[in-house]
Length: 244
Image (cartoon, rainbow, N blue to C red; front, top):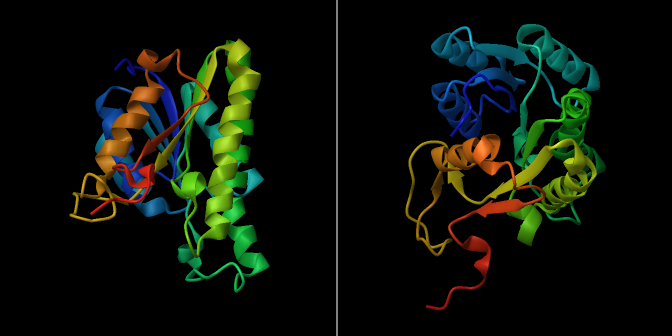
């Protein structure tokens, strides 16, 4: 995969998929802007990668943080070739998983801000320089929740469905500028290793490295003719009921 010298902005870099992606892309020669609300893990990763990594503490739901993040990326590397909108999460981050009937407006605001608004803000902030150069890639991370829905996560399912819809519509608008916009919807993914489960047809969970490999492919020149797609990586979980 041809990523040597590409500048990739990765949000949610301190999480399991984020870390696996950062280390894989670094190994392929990419320059990395590592963004997350947690600063310490970013500094540790950047120290491992070296001068090609720029760690930036940022809240993707805050417009000023996002502007500062992109300004720093442009000052350091001169451009952003690929944006990976990986930051996200459910109401579990607040300890407020609930049925729709018991859900609260403040929880919906948090989930939509983190997942959908954050994707909008980061994309909007990098898109103009991509249009100007007539080149760029945007990779959004959604979830199978946005494909088939999940009980007690109606807010998260709605937000991730919005990310998938945004991906398709934006791909239509920016295709003429040679910008590819794609989406990945993971199922059960562990940060390290796999476990056996009856929840998928492959009878196992996924590993963060497997999602990272798909991100790396979509970021590469090998994926230049792919746009507006949502790649489900879930071991077949969304295929339908299993027959015993």
